[in-house]
Length: 147
Image 1 (cartoon, rainbow, N blue to C red):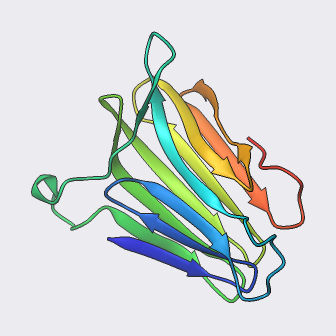
Image 2 (cartoon, one colour):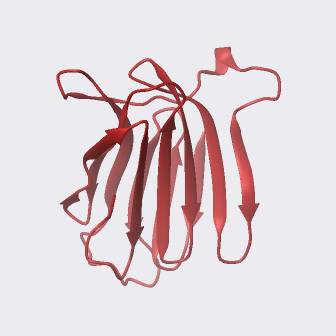
């Protein structure tokens, strides 16, 4: 399962099973030719190593279906909520908000743990961590991703 967000500035593909976001330049070609990258939320182990999060397995679905919900969508905003993620054996939820030139990702653990986003956007590392919650935002006209 893949969520696709296409704007004139960039194209985002969110693979739900591996919880990996791939970013590539859009039609407006405002990003440099080699721009883009990928991000994955991760759990932080006690030795500070990172373990990538995984999406919900089809066999573990509860009543109500696959735990991906459209919160709101309009001309300039797409907002999705994903539940059933597992990060370092801890349950987690993630929200993604996409505007034409920016996006935000929010990762929250349901019961303790350290959250992180790993990967690179435009050659800049996006790795950082926080207790129970982590967010990352990126705008085309900004110089670096912020967390």
